[in-house]
Amino acid sequence: MRPYENEFASATENEELKAAIRERVAAEGRIPFRQFMAIALYHPQHGYYSSPRQRMGRHGDYLTSPEVNPIFGSLVAKQIRQMWQAMGEPQPFTIVEMGAGSGLLARDILAWASRRAPEFFQALEYRLIEVNEWLVENQRRLLRQVDPSLAGVSWLPSLEDTAPESVRGCFLSNELIDSFPVHRVAVRDGQLHELYVEWQEERFMESLGPPSTPLLQEYFDRLGLLPGEGCSAEVNLEALEWMKAVGRALGRGFVLGFDYGYPAEELYAPWRRDGTFLCFHRHNPSTDPYARLGHQDMTSHVDFTSLIQAGREQGLEPLGITSQGRFLAALGIAAGLERQADSELSLEEYYARRRAVTELIDTAGLGRIKVLIQAKGVGQPKLQGLEESEP
Image (cartoon, rainbow, N blue to C red; front, side):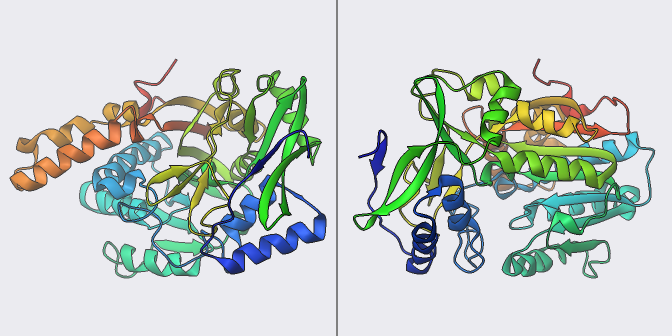
């Protein structure tokens, strides 16, 4: 037996995905958990994010803010229009949304702009970064509700297709980074170890070993800390590379991101014994990544301290970080509760909106999502959504 080992029942609904992971394990003996998670989520045929199934929404596995009510997208659009104004109202102004999922956020941003800010709408160039063709087709159908010609909308399979410093506008993401594959680590006797996945006795098993890359130790050296003795934690190296790629592609403008997470000192605090890794299936949380392979989401919280550091290396300066609840409140979400301000609302629609507003700002739920805004080449404009930013 290894010094640290857990066993999980290998219950799965996706035998092809299970076989693909077993082949990788057999070829290498054992693999870092990050590789396991990457295959489980992003395998091109069988991965969770590659399959044509409903993942988001009340009938999916998890709920994101755009699925709650269009008011979320409307307020995000309101903030992005202020960014456009702060840049001198450039033509075009490009929004690059990564991980657009159902396309609801893009639809609601474009719908608000077309109704409330036609000059802004005319300036918009909306790009969606999406590799899943099934999602692209769904997004096309949805966005045609706003712009039947899709003249101002385009799709790219990856950020690598964006030329350096070519974007003048805003990079937008909603709960994207917390879905990147992560290394899972643990501290034993003051030393950093990494979690590996093996296949033994007809099941996946976990064991600790030396870090698979020196980047893990360098990550904590930059922070000047380690998780506490006996603690487990996650390291999202991919998030740092993504942040640097965004900074390289942005010539001038903003980065607006929504994700669950904490500053490093809180994320890796000694009292956080088991990290933040979770799986979700039909809105039910689990800590077992080996069940329901290909049919459950996997996520972990973002280290905003390291994310900001990575952005600064590419000229992205943080304008502020706040909670989603505070962000939406500063942008006037309370107006959504004023029936008199929108007289065409029926009583049923009014109460539905009130429930949505409460859900979006709930400090125990979606309202605790963090909102990070960074900027490049635009100075330090005061943005309405950061008026109640955290210290």
